Length: 477
Image (cartoon, rainbow, N blue to C red; front, top):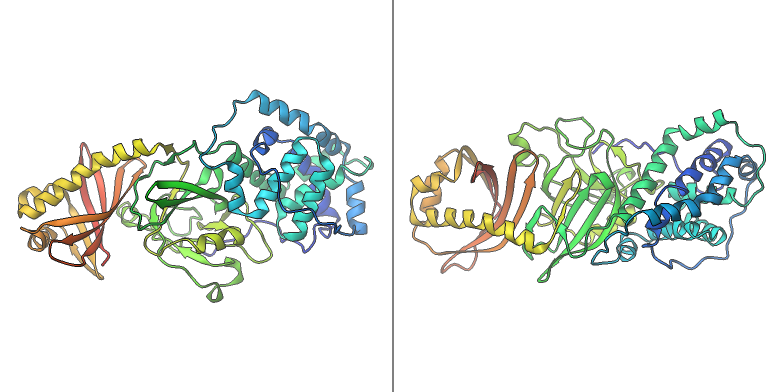
């Protein structure tokens, strides 16, 4: 929650960065733009974006001096970028197409990122001047987008004759600048997310079944610094947008309070915090998740205050690893998310790397677990405590309206509650999580025959051998 910003403080104009910083951008960004696969990635980027404006920023004396100080190596690198990137892309197999084109997903994610990718695309095809025009308009509209400023600065360098080249040692120092390394890694991950799209019609492997009461689902792939938004309908889950995100500055797999790591697991949005009640640091708002969840608690994990939140008003995006454990998004992206999430009903998967499976495969895995739920339901209705006991771990806990019941004492309550009654389960969700252990988070509503309303349960199951065992349950209402 108390994240620490690693990016340098952005300026109000791309041409007011100052001599030292702009020189660093110019020297380092030739490598960024010539990154292998850049052209291949950009072939999936939108072919058009916002119309170029005729407004051209006035160049300051400091900017002109820094531009003329760009090295010959930087200029040579930009000239060779198209051929090198095209060659690299040709050597790689074409990525599988997603159900929704990557350009459509990126356009949905944020206009800023779509426009940045359009710049990459133009540059990759050797169209430097049109790329420069689009980059100029992008930094005008998003002056706090540091990566866009870096790209714009490098494109400016290609328009001036080489002179006053840096020494090799000087260039090496600039390339080793941590801020430049962060921006290059941000660029690499954005392009990776475009090159390696989820296969068409697939879903993250954790989503075996999702009730239509959950209109949206969120999955975070930390290895790609990407948050995927899926819409849920009668037709199933469909990827509708994806966004660049930052995670913990110490990485992922949170274990203890203060370790600056982002947790991995199955979570739910618990609230939406009004940005007026937050510091500017958190941007357009914040969406807390229920870390530590019962599985985390069972394994002794500590800490809290894990949010999905925005960036300060003067900063568009954070480095890929820059928070104290939260998932951080650009404010325009977060605003889109805020309009779609449902408190208590929107699941959030945070994974080291997402695996995407076909809906039939997800349905098959869900059916295997459905038999366990059906057997549990039957034993409860039959009033067979001995049989019901087989479904619970001895340290089972239940939370119900801030009251808790521990161990097998809960079994008697279950039998009294359900014995002899016909019950209907509806709005069923199964979220599967594997990380050494095999767990399932099952959420469903139950309504007994003759009653107009019921209550919702969220159960946490742990596989032991070939059997599933209940270790925690929340009665939600």
